Image (cartoon, rainbow, N blue to C red; front, side, top):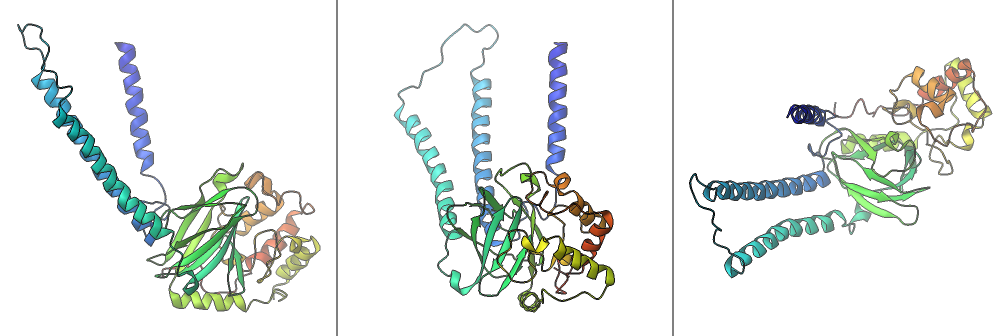
Length: 350
């Protein structure tokens, strides 16, 4: 008995800790607080299925309790077998028809929602963005705009934005819980989905498909701004001069080191689609470094000097000469001044 009680205490303790941890997280990284069209449809289905399951559980529990009370053996009562109901056509019809109805109640809106969210018939009338999944970052090419960026995806609120997604290596999964559901990103074929944000703000996205050692670090952000701010951001990005020399002398030295260390072989500044690494046009405006680090010069120096310690398995490791701390600081100064627009993650929603 003592051993059994000890196990139950451990079970309840673990359950309480799990319940507490389930309430932790970011408010912009949850499907339970929808801020977009796709998330709204998903939330409707979550509530529908939850209410049905609670109802089924309540009915089964009620029948169970009634059976325990009504058919329990009373004191002094002789053993007997209750009336058997096998072959009762009415009961068999009830417990066959009711589950079919419940399945239909769940299935019909689910299928309707699936077709609705897969509808791309009006894609040409909206913003279209080519999304490329890479280990372990995301690349965004705004079709027809000559705007290319990475990691931070800017979209206008109240408008559908169609994403045409392809992977450059392995299978990934594009997911912004607060705005929409998941979509696989495959190397063989283009998958299309649309997202629509109701409110301005910064929403966290994740790769939801195991894709390598740094899969859990493959984060990105969606910055939803007003249509007017979105147009301004597009114009600012289009006006970037990749060869512009910074005014600060340290940043100038960083620019020279950036070019001397062949960083331009993998990265681009401007709308060049040739780069095999993240586009750096608005690097100084981004909300994170390498998708996970807080944006600061110290963190950028850490990333430049030892990227493997930040994201194991990344394709930047050992692709350029080792940098001294002074060289890394100069390059960091240059990259952090790449701020072509006043429309930033910090300004979203303000």
